[in-house]
Image 1: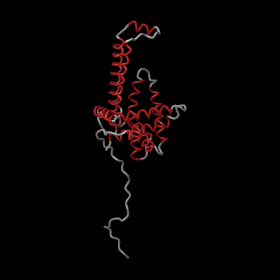
Image 2: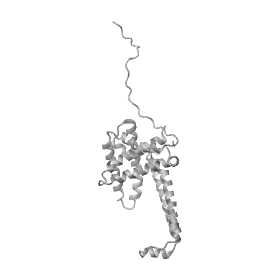
Image 3: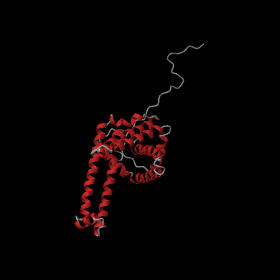
Image 4: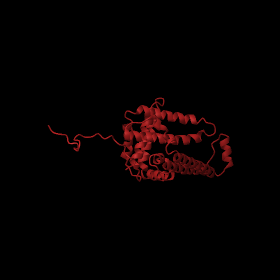
Length: 263
């Protein structure tokens, strides 16, 4: 009969509980068109077994967004801050799905207790940028019509004004505004997960988001076109398809952030 050696290492494998992978944010990486199309599949894979909680989270998010719009005077302003905080929670939900395979509904409100200050600053910057764009739009509009009083009188009377050369100026002003809005979209597209998951300051997050979008402009445009078509199709059966399209697109967004920024 052999004696047991107390110093002998165990021969059987010891189970080690899986650890969540640390999210390491690097410089913006260039992705391909095929990578952009794979984000939808990655989002769907993360949702396996968790569709119910994610659908519920998005329904609550949309209902809160609608409800806050009815607040007198400040509804639209409050919605911008509320959605920034809730989108941070949505990002956390997919981060947990990606790393732990499970999620809690309470994670949707993580932005109200984690990184709240930087997220509020981010919302303020977003408000400032879009107010600035609105002011520029008004200036360009008046410049394009040349402050022509007769043209304004015709519009008030319900007649189509003869814009002549002004029509080309209005088209140019529209193009300029489109470029401004595109630039603003690039600034804020990845900013929330960069602040919330990447522990970045709002200014740094905006700069990195802008650079990442310019680096991957064509893949993001393709992704945006496919996502838009998906939303349009989802609205056909009384908007019920959005219950499936919403979580899928949210997962695809997280997948795009992870592939572009993480190492």
